[in-house]
Image 1: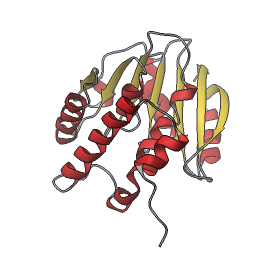
Image 2: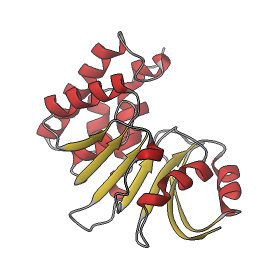
Image 3: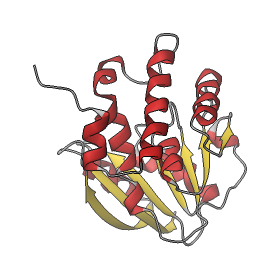
Image 4: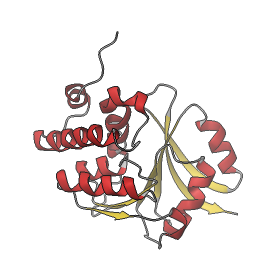
Length: 206
């Protein structure tokens, strides 16, 4: 049986300070503890938490604009991937949007124990007041076309969307391109050879 991807493997592939690694480890421990009470991540992914969730989220960090301060809006944050991981890494003014109240309770506790300043919006995406985001992220939430719809109120002419997608990535992009005029860069995923990270700027839509 293959050895699972550990926190040391994460640190070897994505170097961070010791303090940052300890904060991520505290987050991971809390997630495992809460997972027995509420379903935060797919149970099958729990043994490979550091690769499937932490590295999968952290790989977006080098794609963020250099501009600081940066406002990042994470739609459908769930257990905090990728938004809370990016906040711990230093993304800036991070907003986590999640309608499930139990998951929001987890996010508040995770932010507390990792001493991470984030804004948690415990409401449905459609009811969120415009946030004028520099970056919008979403992971395993909805088809790309729907994500771009939800992102529209928070988008400016300079907003980029960082959206990890699986094996249906190109099909979703084709569908979204029928409604939106998009500038797209593709980045290889570090965690899944069949996955793509889309870096998208919306220049027009119907």
